[in-house]
Image 1: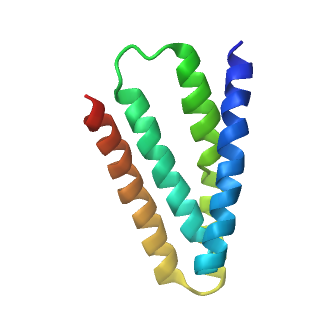
Image 2: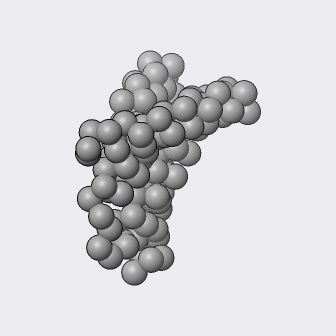
Length: 116
């Protein structure tokens, strides 16, 4: 049953991520903006989920692994950093790494503390 719950969450998270990338691409012409946005949003959702008490394992699989796992992405984050460095935008790459870490961790902590 758990793999089906993960797949069900992924059916929502993956298309939402694609939509975010397309919208950010139109607005900013930079896929890094979309990656940052979905990673921060996913961190906040996962923070809320983990901050709740006694969350059933099925909900963790559905929302935590399935939805958040496909909404957020480390591979795109890594590729964005490499692309920025390749474009000789090292300052932007460093800023992007710092923003992802700081804002992502802050979003997870805020979500967690919000429900505690």
